[in-house]
Length: 166
Image (cartoon, rainbow, N blue to C red; front, side, top):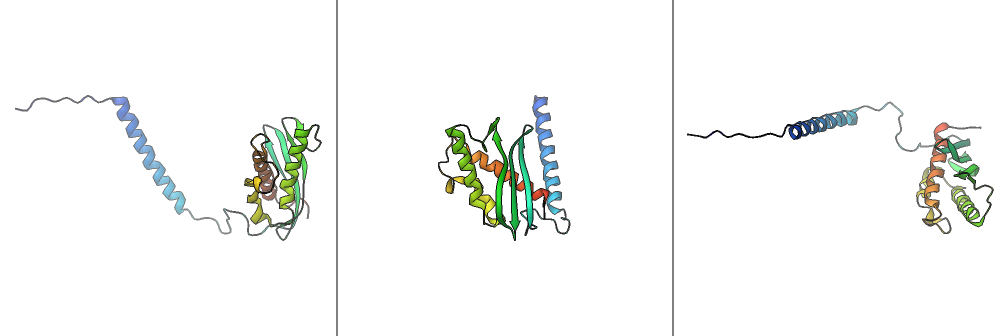
């Protein structure tokens, strides 16, 4: 004769495991459907094939503080001129440096823009993710790498907004 065997189930563990499996199945199904979705004609995920000639303006804002504001002119996707309209962080205006450290940071930011001038924006904007190749004395203390990313964001904002002046 077989004896009775009892299995004690830990209901919270069973519930969480079941919920996790259901969630996983839903995510797989939704992801598969999104992958199969048809993109509208002319929809571009990456950078544009070409940008309109003209002057662009863009900003990087953090916590209601405009930290980077750039203006640049493109002709045939080449940056003809580029400059800061505003460059600040934590109340320090880098366009009007008051001490050596601020002056050094202002110089690094100037080098960031100088690197782009005369170059195709579609090919060289990504250079700013590694400013150590063209900016003097980039180190963790100065934070130039982080601020270069802010410049990228401001430039991309300008491109997304479109031409400011033809």
